[in-house]
Image (cartoon, rainbow, N blue to C red; front, side, top):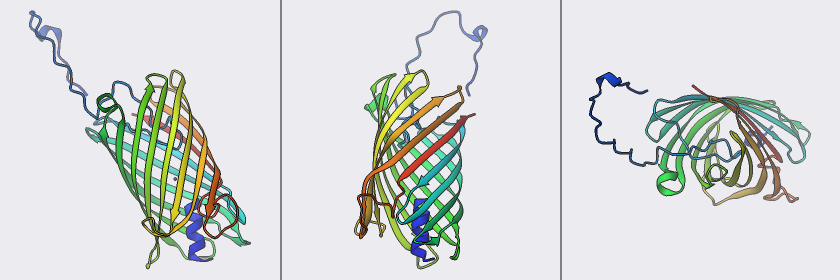
Length: 299
């Protein structure tokens, strides 16, 4: 199986201190000045996973820690069969005001047959997501977070030699409260830069823009709808387009307990085009159906 085919399958296949009353003076002092507004504090938090595949802007408070397990499924390709499954185990830590660091492990398995050729594949990898909040909703009306997400993935495809894929994601997550307590909106921009080896490494990239609305129908329960547009390139820039696709779908988020949250989302490719291929969908660079299920726990 060619390195181009295996690379395409991989692409398919995403404290406080306490004061005692006895220690205080009997005379009431002047009221404490309110804490100044900053990008790092919000009077109303918006769950980052309330928007489906789209992500909100909030980051963890300094010293906070959480863990999550995310399942990703991708189904449907051109001229064959593709069932791709992946899992990401991630921890997240509030390292400093406005700064969250999230190392993760990832693994995946693809059951595929394309053009009569078996393209089953297994992969393992790791990465770290670094998020810094630039703007806060209370102070600026919108929340805005910059993200850098470097990772690597070691793939073992049937009928071909093992190879490693290196990826660096550059992202912007924005959100706002349209009707506080009820309706929220989010916008994501991302550019994923990918090197696929062995040397000389193939170079490719994927640009994505996505928007979503989330409605809190009950306390801690959100329903969402989103639209995402993705474009694939055979370079790290935008000079050689390989195809494009537009996805849409619903999502649900449930804050089951104070610490445990469960979310799920589904996207289907509505329109697209692969360069040099017939049809009104891009099933060469992207899958037709995408599924995401996530469990997150805060300690």
